[in-house]
Image (tube, rainbow, N blue to C red; front, side, top):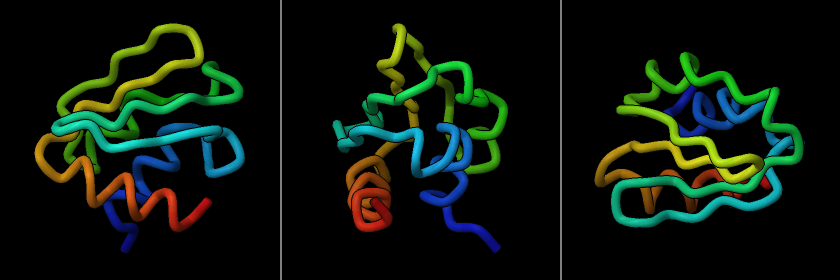
Length: 77
């Protein structure tokens, strides 16, 4: 079964589509290569409350797990 971090990576279009990710209290701000690969609905099974898109800047609203999830994603990169 995929972890929350793996589900978020998939929702962001895969590890190769992520340029940068960080934890920020309740959100996962990230920079992606191709915003069209981001699948908002794929974040829901990971427990995300929503996704905010601003061009290639994507914020996944995840709650207080944001920092540990960001660290796990960084380890995958």
